[in-house]
Length: 417
Ligand SMILES: Cc1cc2nc3c(=O)[nH]c(=O)nc-3n(C[C@H](O)[C@H](O)[C@H](O)COP(=O)(O)OP(=O)(O)OC[C@H]3O[C@@H](n4cnc5c(N)ncnc54)[C@H](O)[C@@H]3O)c2cc1C
Ligand code: SF4
Ligand code: SF4
Ligand code: SF4
Image (tube, rainbow, N blue to C red; front, side, top):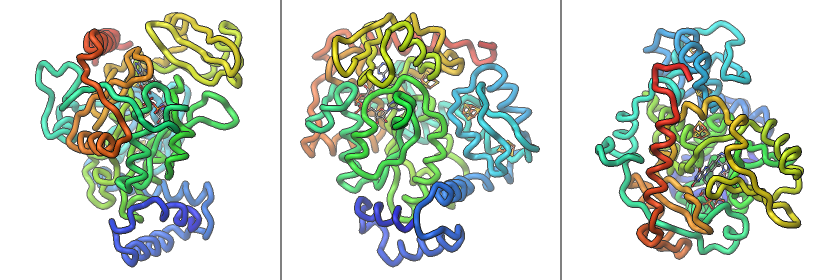
């Protein structure tokens, strides 16, 4: 863990917490956890569990229902589970395990109520979350959620432009946050080295690590909230906070976690800004990779980029011309939870980013005061260029069409999908 601490100290804002206060926090944590002197998977696991535990006991005192009365019948059995893994990470008694359709009980549930308190697919009070995140709920004409402004933007950072998915706004914002010390670390989705295109949760501490995670993978990253536990605690120890990048369902989980009724570890302050990506759906990894080999004729190893434009998915091989298929051909690999999801534009993020088919540019929705401050900071630092949204006629219509399409596609709350 000391090695993690050394790595962190170069990127955290040193004046957020005095060095002596930081040293005390680390000593207490090391004492409680009995951490070994070098970072290891096991110590990080204990660290995460300890951090997540801060959210648990507060809820345990006030709830009576358990997993079997809530998530099992209402989310898992109805095919509404997004497989985000937040419930598993937040079960203090470790009686949940992730199965193919969602969480499963592996021991007796002690009915503490944590799992459903953090689940983005269960009793989601959108109005309350909006009040929490933006200080107000959406007006009737705000179809894609509360927002302050919407602009076109593109990175001016050549390193980002080489590897990004669209305009590189997401990676540039993260590099700006880390470089300026506004956040000490970021929780996001990276890619597994041994398994191309399989997303995995990452905690990144430096701008170069942000670049390793750039680009879009169209399969799902389970368990990002487990990393959030580690990140929040490391941030707490160093007096910093963790940015989060994720899909709309993951943003929803983050907001529920931030709103847990406990103050001890300060989840609300430990996380942020929250950057959301536009999302129509994600595909089952195994099926998608088999499709790539058999139907498209490319191995996952030789594909360097995938992108969706105007209803087609493009696969760019290391050498040779890109190949494409109609996105509709991938319908059988769309995950069940995605078919029930109503949020296209990450309506509860501080900043939401997509491309809506534009070449090399992003559409950016700035929703909160924090989001505005961060985006403005990156523009003023000369890292982003912007254009007025009206310079791309039709973009607002596309956004509204996709927002409405996703709501219409999902079964109503009480219906089975
Ligand atoms: C599954 C998926 C579906 C999407 N669907 C749409 C869509 O329908 N319409 C649209 O306009 N935009 C969509 N997007 C967003 C778009 O692909 C870009 O991510 C967005 O425009 C930001 O571009 P960028 O150049 O700023 O990204 P970059 O600077 O390249 O950064 C991309 C970020 O995305 C994160 N990321 C990559 N894959 C995943 C994943 N599977 N889960 C969580 N985070 C991930 C990375 O960690 C990285 O931080 C989707 C993205 C994903 C991952
Ligand atoms: S013990 Fe675990 S499964 Fe049971 S209610 Fe609590 S968090 Fe949920
Ligand atoms: S949506 Fe996430 S939190 Fe809810 S049951 Fe599924 S895995 Fe658990
Ligand atoms: S459609 Fe996207 S945001 Fe919705 S559940 Fe699927 S991956 Fe999550």
